[in-house]
Amino acid sequence: MKLEKNFPATDAAYPKVAEWLENELNKINCPLKIIMQISMCLEEAFINIAHYAYGEKTGDMTLGLEQENDIVTLHLKDKGKPFDPLAKQDPDVSMKMEDRKIGGLGIYLIKQMMDEVKYERINEENVLTFSKKI
Image (tube, rainbow, N blue to C red):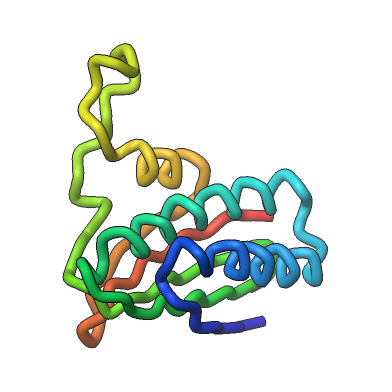
């Protein structure tokens, strides 16, 4: 199965993004625990795109969903400014929250919850891909 859908990269669009993803994951009988993990990671990545990819302008985000055997893969694509979230150093989670720098926890969470995470810049698009065995 391979699906792709475009959404406005705005906070207001996120509920429709989440609903679409959860409906599609339910169709393939994805376990609820995995749906929740994937949804949480999607939210982190989507909100970052909505807030930072296009600056003051707005743009779109394409969400791709693939299922092959027991692996579910999401591809988030945007035409915003180039940004590799994986290039940033992981936060020191041993520090107290109030002592940490702001930012970085979202991508850290994605890297911890998903089995594989990668970033590429392809044809003037940021492509963040993450996969989870179901």
